[in-house]
Length: 125
Image (cartoon, rainbow, N blue to C red; front, side, top):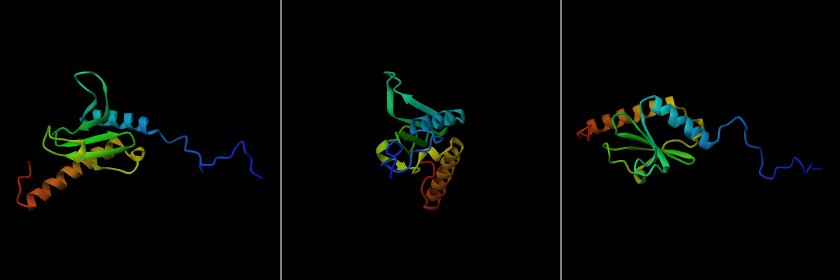
């Protein structure tokens, strides 16, 4: 017989030790900021919070976009980033670390540099 007081029709209860997406997003943005990324969470003109905050690397060519439950990234010339051109970075942002994101940004930048150089294109474009 089922004890209806402890019955959960949705399966297992969530892990109480796992941070929420909002907590993890704040932690990652703080970590990236401390490692030199320019983090933008509010519109500089109005002060309103952005729906999708972002963190841009030192060169301005790499940007992480933080949607409510996912991380996306773009590689573009400084000032030319658009969310519509972003690619998915990870399945579960709660498993990411700021150090891992910095390392991933570096890897993506050098990989793109090498591909452009091998194709005979301007690697800095």
